[in-house]
Every structure is written in C-alpha cells, then in structure tokens.
Amino acid sequence: MDSAEKLKNVEFMNIEDAGTNADHNSPDDQGVISAHTVGQDSWQQMGFLLVTGFNCGYLLSYSSLIMAPTGWTWSIILLFVIGFYCAYGNWLLAEFHFIGGKRFIRYRDLMGFVFGKYFYYLTYISQFTSLCLANMGFILLGGRALKEMHFVFSDSPWRLQYFIIFAGLAYFLFAFLIPTMSAMRTWLVVSAIVTFSYIILLMVMAVEDGLSNKSRSYDVGGSQVSKVFNAFAAISVVNGANSGGFLPELQSTLRQPAIKNMRKALLAQFTLGLFFYYGVTVIGYWAYGSSVSWYLPQQISGPKWVKILINALVFLQSVVSQMMFISPVHEALDTKFLDVKEKLHSCKNVKKLFLLRALFYTLSTFIVAALPFMGDFVTLVGSFSLTILTCVFPSMIFLKVKGKVARIEKKIWHCFNVIVFSLLSIATTISAVRLIIKDVSQYNFFADT
Image (cartoon, rainbow, N blue to C red; front, side, top):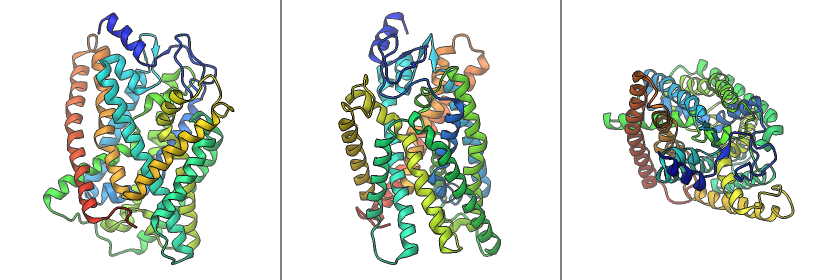
C-alpha cells in the first residue's frame, strides 16, 4: 500500500494516535473521537471482564452442542485444538493494535487501513452481525432462565415470549444506566461472585446426578452425513465459546502498554476462564450422556431452591455479559448520534441515549421472540464471522504487515491458517444454515419452545 492510499484510509477510518486518549470521549491529536472511554482501564479489569463474560449462560448449552454430537474423543480434540487457535489468533491480533505509530481502536479500522475499504466494510458487517446475533442469544438465554424459575413456582402456561420481553427490558435498563465497558468496573466483582457461584453449584449438582445415573449413554446417533454436519456445527460453538471477534475494541479501553496489558488479560481468559467453561461442558456431558439438555439447569435434580438460585444467578450474570459483547455496536451508534464532547448521561445526550438503547433492544427482543432457537444463535455466531475474524484475518494482517521480513516458516504457517480456516468457515456456515432450516421447518414463528 503506497503513502497516498494509506493517507486516504487514515482520512476515511477512525484511527487513534499512539498516545492514549486520557479524557473521556475527547478527541485525540488527529481529531479522532469516540463516545466511549479509551485508554483508561487496567488489565485486571479486562481480565475480570473476559473471564466472567465468556463464562456466561451460553456455556449451559455447550455439552449439548459440542460434545453430544461428536462424542468423547472428537469433542475433546475440538475443545483444545480450536481453543488453541482462538487463543493464538487473539494473541496475534493484540500485537497489531499499533501499526506505524497508529493505534487502532476498532477492528474495522485496522482491516481498512491494511487492506482497503472493501475489508473495512466486510469486517464491519461480519463483526456487527455476529455481535447482534450473540446479543439476541443472550436475550433468549435470559428469558429461558426466567421461565425455568417460573416453572418452579407455578404451572401456569406463561409463554416463553413473556419472559423474553422481561429479559430484553432488563438488558435495556442496564445498557442505558451502564453504557460502556469501562463503566462496568464496579459491577465486575459482583459479576465474578455471581458467575463462580452458579458454575460451582451447577457442577456439584451435575456430579451428584452423574454418580447416581448409571444408565447414561454416550452413543452419537444419526447418519454419517448428519454426524459430519454436526461436527462442523460443534466447531462453530467452540469458536464462539472462546472468542467474540472484537478484540481491538476491548483493547482500546486499556491503558498503556496496551499490547502487554491485553495479553495479560487474554492469559487470564484462556487459563482460569477456560477451566470453568470447559469444566461445565465436560461434566455436563459426563453426567447426562448423549441425552444432555441444551439448557443444563433444566436437567439437574435436587431441591427447588437450587434450580431457582442457579437460574437467578444465570440471569443476573447474563445482564453483565451481554453488555460486553454488544458494546462495540453501542459505541458505533453513540459516536454517530450523540454529542461526543458531552458525557453520555448529560442533559444534551441522555434523551438520545435512551432512544438509541430503546430502539435497539426493542428490535432485538422482537426478533428473538419470533425465532426462539438458542442453539442456532450459538452455532451461527461461531460459523462464518467468528472463524474469519479470529483465525483468518490476524494471519492475513501478519502476512501483509510483516510478510517481507518474516522467516519462510512463519509465512507458511500463516498461509496455512488463512487457507484452512477460510475453508472451515465455509463448511461451518453451511452446517449452521442447515441447522436453521431444520428448526424453521419444525417450529412456527413465536414458538413457545
């Protein structure tokens, strides 16, 4: 890319100077602005955010979506191989937060600067599609947790859609009152306590069930073709379990040295965090076998108060987790429509902020209520978009930025990653679409699943 093209991209994209933006939503030396805070958070805060965020209620479906379709051997291989590539892709991407003295606070800006406008828009669409789908999955998850609590108290036939609306309202209120990732710092300790409480309680109950359940089976059913497609779907879920596809946006909140601090936070996610969400996945499959439920608390035995407590904690924690995953979308909307020279809750911004959040969560809640298929959300999120964002684009950036000076073995390694995971993204997307078509053929709109 020549100098003129680089300059054109700098003018087109929002790119920060290497110096941190110390003041809340104030422009940097180049006049680049963001409605959200940049460069102020510690790596410990980010570590808490990643560990609790990825140990969200989505993990309650991993036993069913990852291990039941593939069995013990292949599921363990997928968990560790795809998990390794997700960790490696994020670790590598963190290095390119700075290129040529420029700091890139958004993934789309980075791709646009390195490869041009086509990749800017491709990244924009891929990233925001996956994040919006993930957020819809959170709304459905929250609604399911509320419905499970309701079943404990009453047998009245309240439809799932009522609980989806309640969950959407709760998420809207939190996103309005706590509008940025940096503003979540006071909630992260509470979120960690809630997260580890329901995970430990769930694992204890699952182990008790497993010890008393002697008739479980681990057979993988279906035709050979179904097994292949289900395996690709499982890869999508593992990808979604380990990566959100928005690392530059997360990294933008960190104070200097941003690269070192981001990698410390990633280390926390892929050690402590991974231990828990993989632990629940394995224990759930061990306890219930191939018949494990797509929503694990639905299957555990024990006193009523245990189910109530687990579902209540899952719901509360999902409120915080969904905010992490959808923050890049909020940042884009806030930067475009609000006065970034004012605080988000200033008199000048508060009405627009309320309206933006209300419109976003109303639309998301309506879509979820119409298509309440949680497994499909998880699978689709991890298929094309996250595979490309996590495993393909970082290697492409490496080849473009460092290809001329890199050793031949590194070039081969990154070319291998680009080719293999591009093909894998196609296969996983076909599998995800196949699953959606299958569910759409079985359920009506606004189904009470």
